[in-house]
Image 1 (tube, rainbow, N blue to C red):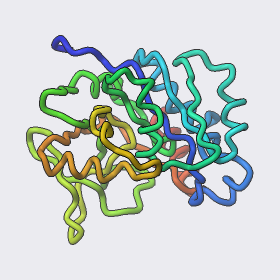
Image 2: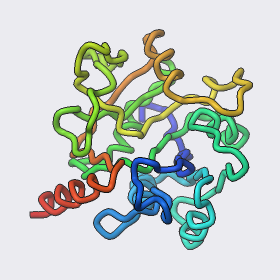
Image 3: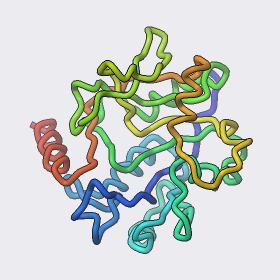
Image 4: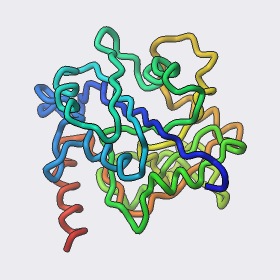
Length: 242
């Protein structure tokens, strides 16, 4: 890693209400919805475990007891629960809450409604290898908008030849979508005083400063945000094994 240390902690977002996954999420939190026989949460945690990430901080709010029970037997990565039962903090607020656990070190982010079929190398490791805190405030794993499964929006970012990301022009379709996985600096939130706030504006601010970068995912990205997307993802997984 050219002398840079791989982040050893991932913040895994599992607190959301999962409204687009209804009616399934009326009784099951979205992170515990199964795709190809494994929960979305485990798909995410498996990728980090295989890449050698030591611990995952998992925030919980909606149907939190189910998620905690599910994770009790998991040892790799080590699980730390960030309890948001009293108030849902959104992704930015969820990060601010766990800052004392990070020792000021960069960390991974992971949404649980997205995963992928790996290419030749672990995308988590590729992200860690590209991470350069001298140039970057955040490094996002991005996927091709037109070649991903379950993408029902117009993309998120444009990317130049050096990997710098810029926010999508609302008049156009952007070639890349954010996969839900990133490396980010905790310093971005050091002066934040709100309890509840969104993460995306911090990405966009970093982009305006030329400090938001992207790495194109090697493989096939699967966004599982709705019940219909489950079947699409399972079909893609089956085809990849043929």
